[in-house]
Amino acid sequence: MLDRKTGEYAEFLFAFRARHVGKSYINTAIIPALCCKAGVPTADVRGNITSHRARSTIASQLYNAKEPMTLFELQAWLGHRSPASTQHYAKITPNTLARAYDDAGYFARNVRTIEILVDRDAVTSGQAAVGEPWQYYDLGHGYCTYSFFEQCPHRMACARCAFYTPKESSKGQLLEAKENLQRMLASVPLTDDERAAVDEGQSALDQLLERLVDVRTPAGPTPRQIGIPAQTTLLPVIQINRRPAEQ
Image (cartoon, rainbow, N blue to C red; front, side):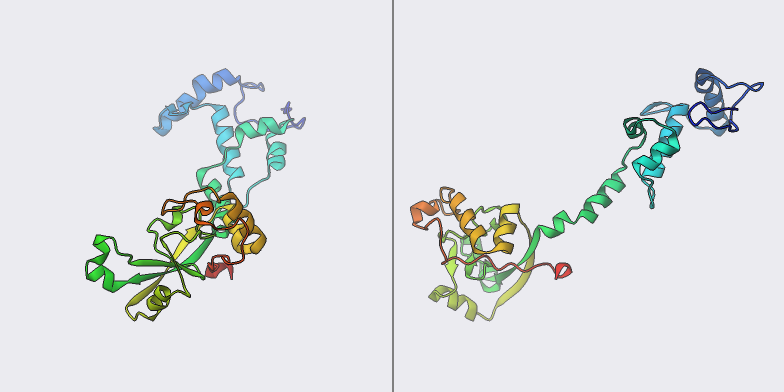
């Protein structure tokens, strides 16, 4: 019989005396009978099992296959005049969405690793329990002892608050001379501004400093109150290395 959508002759699955079987009869009689014979329910959380549901399921499987059909290929296969109609049939599965996000590589591009020094003596002696610093984030130009380093807005442009220790200071030199330090690596997610400060250099750092000039440091005062200028060459960009997979 002639297919009204494609204009071609085709063999139909359900027909009666060389005539099309109505949609209502398929949905109200044939599909419930097939479900009963197969031992499956006639409805689920999405509603009744209908011929339209079967068509949508097959379209979604083709759209989410390992070698998926494009939207326009699926439109031609379904016989739709408009891509908008095809979009109602093709649903992206969570697995396909997660795979697409992983392939995009956004998270990997916005993560860097930073070295952390752990003072084991401060931990074992109990000094860490009374507030003494025991972990130090290596910023390249100094060390930060702020426990919530990942949440600090100044981490890419240290404002030299009470948690900051320059490497050229006597305290920084004594820390580097310790033999009981354990070195570890931690992944730090970066915002777009912070990533620019790491990748693009001094101009991006100056812009970041200018935006943070009135933002309080973990110690309390703002960079303006400390006296850090909006543009400076005294604070190099934090030396965070790329992940091994990106090198």
